Image (cartoon, rainbow, N blue to C red; front, side, top):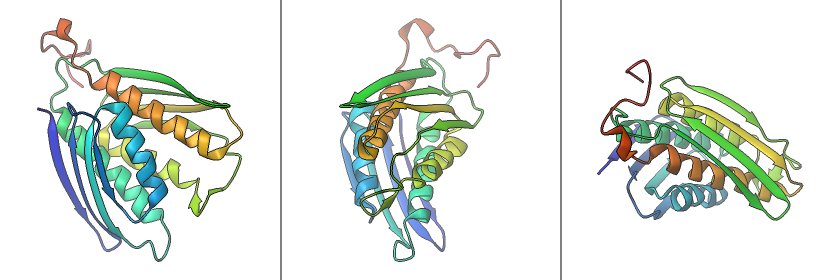
Length: 195
């Protein structure tokens, strides 16, 4: 089983993340940021990753540190659970619609962190949640999962739909990339021989 548990304690947040990359898509979340928990559930369900995330953060100031640090810690946990990457598919992509919205996510477990995100949010906030924080989440994830990630919201006018399609597509792309490829027979999925 490809599993990992990571703790991250700072003066701003105390976070515990556990993942099982070969799970059933179950999630338990206690972060103090309900909309983020809704999005984490999308990753778990569509990525078929069991996730348990708890965070005690300084949400009395705002949600920034909690959202960014959860991205960092989840990235570390997935990177640890992936292990040496031998036999994995490596690349993943997905298009996901939700009513009028459509997003595409492409991921490469390249060992080289890079984020290109083009989501022209139609609103600055979804309820009390600042939509700009999703960039911080994904940047933290990318830097610590050591992946290249491209995120594009192709269309949509409802900001909730826009971001939900992104997270569903992210989960699906993760699922594809993380799936072991039986034809690889434990080989490294790179012409360099290392990732």
